[in-house]
Image: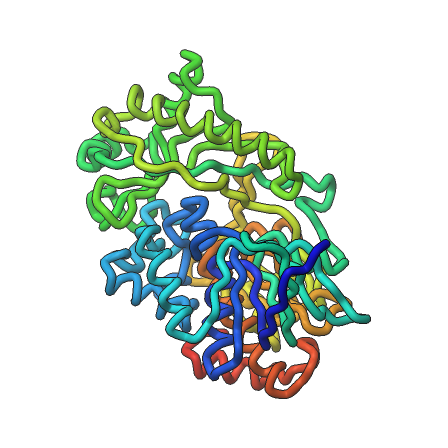
Length: 452
């Protein structure tokens, strides 16, 4: 491999999704030389690239459990008109949802990092991890101008697929423990010019057709609607061969602009995003499903008669892929019991939300509204590598626990912990495993993060 050049930093983050961008902000605050590597041309990850929106959830009941840099970013997006903020979840699955304008999100996230002193390398992809004994020394990365070695003292894997940890030879798990199958992928898309009032009127007249929060009696009571229902319409379309999906319902969320919705209905099963040929097959099938669903909505669903297909995702949405085996593996029981650890660095309240890898079923194991759980720092530490942390959905968890920790706000909170841990490790010249956890927790609180 012909190496064209060399770049050196103190902390390098790979992956510009929700966890990576917050990790970069946290790492750079204080003056460290920080670089964020992103294979695409913008930040935001699954929200901007795969249209996995709105963001769910910053709250447990009435308590906001995710603040810090994640909340600061949301406020900056709000200042640019890109979100109406945190609003009640009309479906009652979470306490709140946060609709965002994905284009404004891309811009605000970029400026947020540049103003913090982060160097962003877009269109750059890691090819190889180079090690000496139990430390990563450099990452060999591909750019449009050639191959570069990128050196750092500390690395954060925020790829979502644990790509750096995988290339470094760390122990991995994929999918559910019994057979390695992953949750289905979904090709998200947006539609606009949707007649929201007509949908609300229909739902009021056919309440048995919909799932709504126990906190409301009508969708007219919420700022933005969400729909999980139209069961009879889906059944009718299936009988008429106008819809052939492993789904039993229409699922969409109204976004920042009234009448603009994100459709979450496609379902591609028995494919893995970490298998290149399977990912291509899933993308082809997902895009076909987008058009099939679009036609179904216009033909069958009240309120969509004059709607328009606005945008499909750049990439299919991936629910599950690799995850590391870390110093601790968070479990379903930890989540259900609301366990708070002595090294808790982030909180979560999203339910265990498992989409059946083989079909259309969804298993949701909810905590009581207002309950939450802690995620220990040890879940971010892959075994055997001194200077690598993993943040985001690929942290150390069981398949069941993964179904809760995978959502964007939790990933943002984990990113803040990873970034601050990197600063502490850098200052004290310590392996990630050996930093003072009390110092990390104090610094998280100082930066307005909630950890208890």
